[in-house]
Structure formats: structure tokens, C-alpha cells
Amino acid sequence: MIILKSPREIEEMKPASQIVADCYREVAKLIEPGITTREINDFVAKHITKLGGRQFTKGYNGFPAETCTSVNDVVAHGIPSNRALMDGDLLKLDIVVEYGGWFGDSCWCYPVGNIRPEAQNIMKVAKECLDLGIARALPGGRLGDITSAIQQHAEANGFSVVRDLLAHGIGRSLHEEPNYEHVGVAGKGIRLKEGMVFTIEPMINEGTFRITIDDDQWTARTADGKLSAQYEHTIAITPDGPLILTAQ
Image (cartoon, rainbow, N blue to C red; front, side, top):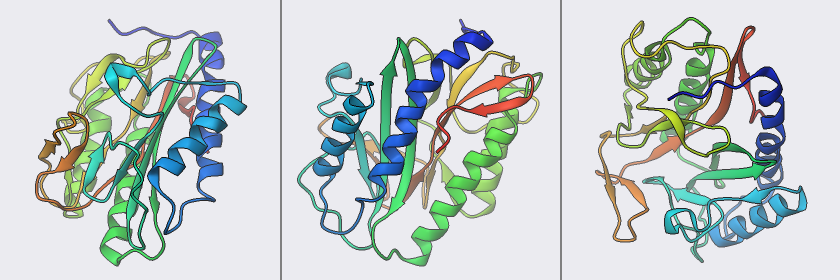
């Protein structure tokens, strides 16, 4: 069942999402060659606490860290480690915060030092896919309006869209209905209604859309070892259109 939020509840959701956004603003200053993903994770964990939020990721279904740090061919759910980022890496940082009983969720993609033109391009297209999807999150529309815009733009630029990892509704739980892939047909799918709050989080791959899971049962990689890029926002559907709760 999709849980619709009232205008008051959407207002109550904003602080969690804005703590997420503030973490990105601050951590962006630290990302450079030589820093480890564990150091990035620990900074974010402390910043969440400093702002009065609660991290949720560590311990969730056994996940061992406060953030997901996914580098290069890792699509999602990368586990922070003592691996130092290197010049040319592509980092996806996923942060979840709970505040006042509500959740905020976002992922952002960062270049590390000087990245190759192909990496710059996939970052650009992934962000455009997110923006195109958000623009179609309109009351009265269909979920397929969002997903088709993402799929068409990614594929028109020679990339693919991951199917096996889903976007989701969000509210007092991190994962609510709807759960959905970022591929589809315009005019199809569930009707979009005012009060729906969910993530849009297309994962865009340089090669195949297929993924593999490491032995740690978390780390998702591109099946062909090529790059993946992702941007994610938590959005609410309002009478005035989409409201980006995790806007930076």
C-alpha cells in the first residue's frame, strides 16, 4: 500500500532530508586522492550526529557501516574500507538519515581528482537522467512517465539502466511502496498522486545493465567491470509539482 503524506507530514520530513544534504555539502570538501572511504564514512557519521540526526544504515540487515561508498564499477552498497581513493576514481556516496521518526535518502556522485572524459560524460548523463525523472513527477501522471524519460535518455547516450536495484517510497520507514525499476513506458504504471514521497535514483552503467554481487552479499558491481554513476533524491509530489526534499 502506498502511504500518502499530508502537507504537514511532508514538512516534518524535511529536516531528515536536509541533514543528508548538509552532509554532502560538507563531505564534498574532503573528497580528493588519498582519502579513504572509511574516513569519508566516519566524517559523515559524526556530522549526522552533530546535526541531531540518527544514522540508519549501519546494522540495517547486517550492513556494517553508516554510508555506502561505491567506487568505479561498484554500482551500489559498497562497504567503506581503508582503500584510498585514487586520481581518476568515481565515487558514489549514499547517505540515509532518520530524524523525528522520518527518513531522508540520497546518493551523490563525485569525481576524484582528474577523471577521464568518459567518466565525466557518464556523470553528466546520470545527473540529467535524475533531473528528467524528477521533472515528470507530476500529480495525475504515471510512474512510467518518470522511468521512460530516464531509460530513453540513458540509452540515447549509449548507456544502460540497472534493473535489479530499485527505487522506493519513503517516510516513517526507509523502504515503502512503490518499489520500482528505472525503466518503463510513458503513460503506464501507477498513478502519481499528491502526497506520494519516494526516491528517484537511476543507476547508469557504461556497459551492460546487469550486475553481480560480491561474496560480502552487499557490494553490487557492473557485470562487465565498466563504470557506473548514480544520483538520487528524495522527492514529494505536491500540487505545484515535485518538491526535492534532499536538495543541496
